[in-house]
Each structure stands twice: as C-alpha cells, then as structure tokens.
Image: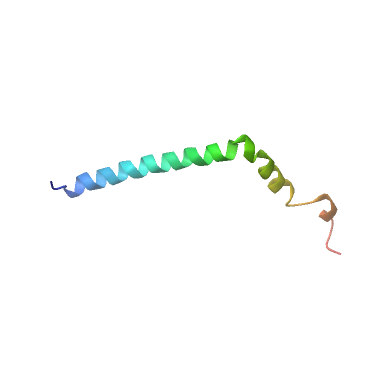
Amino acid sequence: MSFDHDTVVGFAKSFGLFYLIAMSICVVIYAYWPKNRKRFDHAANSIVSDDEDRPWQ
C-alpha cells in the first residue's frame, strides 16, 4: 500500500487541525474547572498584595 505526497499532506493537515482543536478544548475545560478557581484567584491577587502596594522607599 503506497501513499502519495498529497494524501499524506492532507492527512497531516486534518490530524493537526483536530489535534489543535482538542488541545484548545482541554485548555478551556482546565481554565473553567471549578476546582481550579481558588488557585487562579490566588494567582491573580498575589501579584500585588495590599501591604506591598506602595513606592519602593
């Protein structure tokens, strides 16, 4: 069974498209998973703490 170049390129493009769509869906699910909310809220709020929100000196 031999495959020509166009067949292999078409399969690779299709597989790559579905792979990227699946990875995007996984990232969105991870970002909106309820268990991760506390971790993301802490990361968002830990950048600037209330006691550190002043000039350096």
